[in-house]
Length: 149
Length: 149
Length: 149
Length: 149
Image 1 (spheres, chains in turn orange, yellow, red, cyan):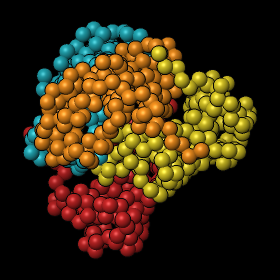
Image 2 (cartoon, one colour; image 1 turned 90 degrees about the vertical axis):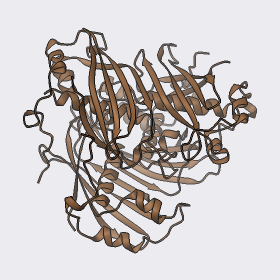
Image 3 (cartoon, chains in turn orange, blue, cyan, red; image 1 turned 120 degrees about the vertical axis):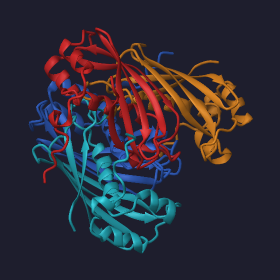
Image 4 (tube, helix red, strand yellow; image 1 turned 180 degrees about the vertical axis):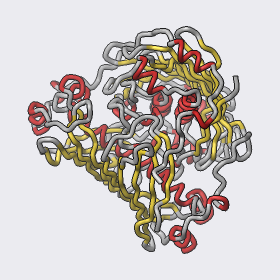
């Protein structure tokens, strides 16, 4: 399976008084990458939650911070499904600075599939297939650009 | 002066247990719009801070929340300079949902120009000119897309 | 009506690269003050939402930043109900640094009362009474300290 | 060495649309515990950074989420130094819900000691001693309560 790539730009609010991005934001960026990974396969978290009563609750997170990210850096979050089991799945991530291709961080998250009452359940087969499928070419994917102009 | 438009997508982490975006995030989005407004005029906050010892400290913020934003919504943040004085400037904002052009929020921020010791100083003339200038056409602006692929 | 006071300590994650607290955090602190104000009157947001299907959605926020807050500062958030109408209410706030009693910020939030579908509804009478009542003495209020030791 | 305990209350802004606390906040809470651990030993991050040019940059974070935290829960963050080397140190954490003593999460962070230019340096001996020392009794520690009333 190939990496899915999502571009983000570091926000001022994400920096701290060390002048670099605060460590907790990397978990938010992993999630941005994960959401985008799903959208590129034609479904969304929202849909899983609302239509199929399946939540992907984070059970573990790990991040290794290799080099700091700075305000205004354009970053690339690379996301991949590492492992799918009947009731859990594991995503892995790499975050690069676009300008110089420096690897800033790498990490992973383990998710349990639960229902809305936080009871563990199995991942619906349709999502399993989509998660393992290739990316849908851009023109058919969830519309990314709908600005009113 | 025309509005500058910046597109963002609502992150899962930005929602709260009401199922909508938490109110504090709109101030972060205003800042994203402001940063992007400056970049489109060929300069950045970082440059103002590092090269010219001029910080734009937020002195007031106001936001009117008209309709909720939801996870995965693509939003357009519209930003404009409303007023420039010798030692302060005011930005105004509108946030739309791209898909249905609903106005979700509008607001403003007042900024004092200070040096690194938080003493009020006058805005360097060069930035004043840039802030009032038209947007630089995309091909000459700060590079937006530098993904390593 | 008297001010309700809530003490918080500035977190590292709340600072930005200017070395001061990022402006969006003040709206989070206002909310901390508001939650604590309610608890001191014997009820909680959670209860309003879950038992009585009444949400206090933020319709407007305003903050004036007078002096920066720094990492580790102990702050006092002062909260008061300014106005109660049938379907809306307004809270006002002041934030002081405890050590030198400097006023750092003041602001207000306007709230609409809605049901879970975000339809405006009237504030249940029982909450109106509680909001206008005096604070419950500490020993009878919502338990604040239940550490496992 | 004993655990240091810090009490916090879950903020509304820390929840997400699943109705539970968003996973990134646990790293912020670990940091709150770490800051408080240091203060209880008579020093602060701020002092290390400003007086001794020693930053504790996060190099790795790990968190295992065992049970969700909810809005208004009173939590106890337990913090301990697990390992001190010449240029790095490792903290470990446990987070409990105070009301029922449920273990909600456990984790660790690895820190590199650097100077202000992010170059690795050795941890000043005085801090090493303080980190390994017993907690200072409350009456002599950094003042916790300085409300202006």
